[in-house]
Image (cartoon, rainbow over all chains, first blue to last red):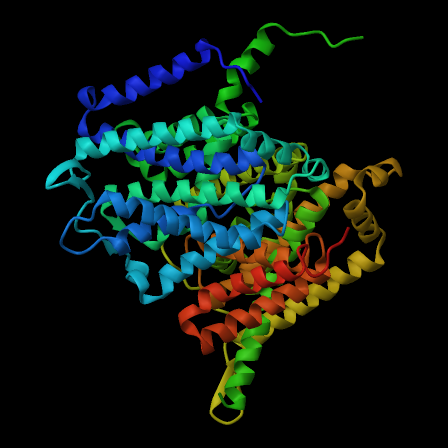
Length: 331
Length: 293
C-alpha cells in the first residue's frame, strides 16, 4: 500500500478530470451520453473495487445493490412533483446500505468460492423479487416521470432533469467516490481491510474483529453501488429487472479485471474500456452487417486481454518496462 | 393436489434433477480436480441441444439413422471438442487466478453464443423425440405421462451408475479421486496428470453436451438456454460441495424437487426458491453438503 503519492501520479487524474469536465463542450450528444453511461458504470466498478481489490471479497452479486438503488429511486419518485435530492439520495443510500448489511451479514459467514456463490444467490433472489412480483411492474419494469431537484426556498439549485446539470452531477459523484475510496485506502480502516485480504487469520490474531471490518466494507460498497443505481435510474428514466441480472454482476467484475484489480484508476479505466469495446464492435459503420454479432469480437478481445495482460491495463507500463529491460535471473 | 398429480410432479422433479446432475457432475469434476471455474459449461449444454437439432436432418438423409445415431455422433464430436478445447485453451488456465478463469471462460460464452447465432440463427426450434418414445403412458385414470421423460430419467440413472462405477471401481477413477485430493502427489507417483486432466475435461464436456442433446425434445432449443442451466448447475455444485459427485447427485435432486414443486405450489416466488435453498444450506454448512477435502 502506497502511503506517499507523488505529484506525478496525481497529474493524470487531474488531466482526466479536466478532460471529462470539458467533454460536453466538444463531444457530440451521442458521445456525451456514452461518457455519462461510462461514468455511472465507473462508480459501480469503484464500489466493487473496495470489496474485491481492497478487501479480497469477490462478490458475484454486486448488481443487486445497483439494482436496489435504481428501484428505490423509481419507487420513491412521486408521479407528479419532482422529489428533492436532499431526501431522495440519502434514502436510496440507506436502502442500498441496509440491503447490503442484511446480505453481507449472512454471506460473510462463508468464504472463497462459496462466498462468490452465496452473493450470486442473494442477487438472484433480489432479481426474482423484482421480476416475479407486482412490487414494481414485474418483468416490464417501471418508469420515472420526474427527475429529482435540489431547491432552497423556491430557488432551484440543481435540476437533474437538465442533461448538462446531470452530466456534471455525475462527474462530481464520480470524483467524490474516487476521493472517498482513495482516502479510505490510506486510512487505518483501509489498511485493516488490506490486511484482511493478505492474511485474515493474522489480522484476527492481532486483535481485529475481521467480520465487522468486512461487513463495514460490504455495506459501504453496497451503498456506493446504490448511488450508481440512483444515477442510472435518473438517467434512463426507466428501470427493469435486467439491471440486477447475474451478467451485470459479471460485467462489473469484468471491468475490474480488465482495468486491473487493486487500483482505483484501474476500475475506472476498465469501465471505459468495456463500454468503448462494446460500442466499437456494435458499430455498423465499422463492421457493417457483422456488427450484429458484436459479442464474438468482444469475447475474443476479453480472452486476449486476460491472456496478454493478466494484471489489467494499469499494469501494462510496468509489463512493458520489464520487456524492454529484461532482468537476468540471479544465478 | 391429488395423488396422480403429485406422482406426475415427482416424476418431473426427478427428470429435471437428473438432467441437471449430468451438467453439474462435469462442472464439479472440472472445478474439483482441474481447479477451473468454467463459466462456459452452460454453453456445452446449449451446443448439445443445437447439435441434436442440427444433426437430425443430416443423419436422416446421409445415414438413414434416427435420434440415437445422432446421439452417438454428438457424443463422439463432444469428446473430441472437449479434448481439443482443453489442449488449446483450458490447459493455459490452470495457473491463473480464479478471477481470470472466470473472465476468460466468460469470453468463451460470448464466442460460443455468437458462433451459434452465425451458424444456426436465433430462432427457437423444436426437436421431435424418436417415434417409439413419442407416446405417453396412462397414470391413475385421467392423467398420463410422456414416455420420453421417463426415458430421460432412465438414461440419466444409467449414466450416473456408469460414472459411479468408473470413479469407484477403475484405475482411472482411482487416479481421478487421488487427483482431486492432491495433484502434486499423484503427479509424483507417475500418473500423467496432463492426460488425466484432458480426460476429465473431455468427459465433463461430453456429459453436458449429452444432457443438452437428450433434453432438446422436451425443452426445445433456444438462444441463451446455456446461461440458465449454468447458474443452476453452479448452485447444485455448491450445495453438493465442490468436487463431490455424490453431493452433486443429492443436490440436483433437491433442486429438481424444490423447483418443480415451487412452480406448482408457489408460482409467485418459484424463481427464487432454488437460491433460497442454496443460501439456507450454505448458512447451515458453509462448504456444501459433501465437502471432499
